[in-house]
Amino acid sequence: MSHGIVIIGSGFAARQLVKNLRKQDSQVAITLIAADSIDEYNKPDLSHVISLGQRADEMTRQSAGEFAEQYNVRLFPYTRIEAIDADARLVKSADNQWAYDKLVLATGASALIPPVVGRELMLTLNSQLEYRACESQLFDARRVLIVGAGLIGCELAMDFTRAGKAVTLVDSAASILASLLPPEVSSRLQHCLTEMGVQMLLKSQLHTLESTPEGIRATFGSDRHVTVDAVIAATGLRPQTALASSAGLKVNRGIVVDNTLRTSNPDIYALGDCAEIDGQLLPFLQPIQISAMTLAKNLLGGNAPLKLPAMLVKVKTPALPLHLAGETRRCDLSWQITTEAQGMVAKGVDAEGQLRAFVVSEDKMKEAFSLLKALSV
Image (cartoon, rainbow, N blue to C red; front, side, top):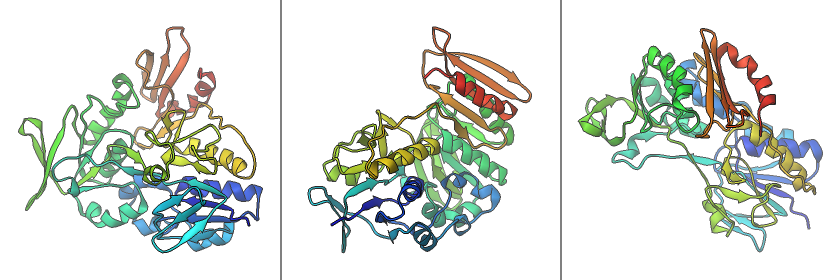
């Protein structure tokens, strides 16, 4: 008896997979199980909801019922899978179980919350559900502390500032986007945020958070402190691997998959933010889209290897948008930077003069595609 394909998760990766499966096969049984409502929303929009005045419910693009009908999928929302019996090919919740022929883990990643005293006062904005839980506090807040000056932290800092809020951005690194870019490249965005009014606390460590009558008191080293109305953790994501690990699958930072997106169990695959591909976590839309196309073929009997081209990463900071690609974190690159009023072009070249990475901003972003073609991979 055929049980079809079971997908655990309802985010972008899971939906892309369903859409690609249905392009190739209208009849294969697909079951999607998730702990949330399974309503569709665009997760990158979370970087702009405050300045747009958008409420969580307004983010919904398609209801779960509409999705199920359009793509002929059995949905089980608000259902938490507690165990996988890989030998029997079953997934189990507290009161139900589902048999599968092929299982896909698209469990995503959860927001990291720094382990400081008062961490329970921190908010996270990693899903529509999380935003719904704190939207009133964020709209009412006049003073906001954002912990983490990476991709999401910088996007949120600009969005909250554009909404008229007083923003403090704190990070232990000496520059913003430190895990993505060298400081001489990210300095243009750092200057822009400062000019907009964002207070930067770089090379600073958050020590404690405390609720007081005046607001939330955040204390840093050297007895420095600020008082704010809301604190947001933007210090990165941790792949959701507990379910895979308890099922005996190989797990490193993420769920380890081969180039066909198969885990260490031949009937179980992983996709999206939870998957570790060639030792890398790739929590960006384009690699997930390409991975979903490849996995759909393989679930339907193929054995196609995943081939990821050089891809653009977009920093969604409207006052100074950036595109970057390549090995921007390599320490051995020489950066050739051209800065003009209308934008910046930064090229990272290796010892042989090969282009290995680039960053472009503002009006210079139109050069990204020609640079992408020139990139050595």
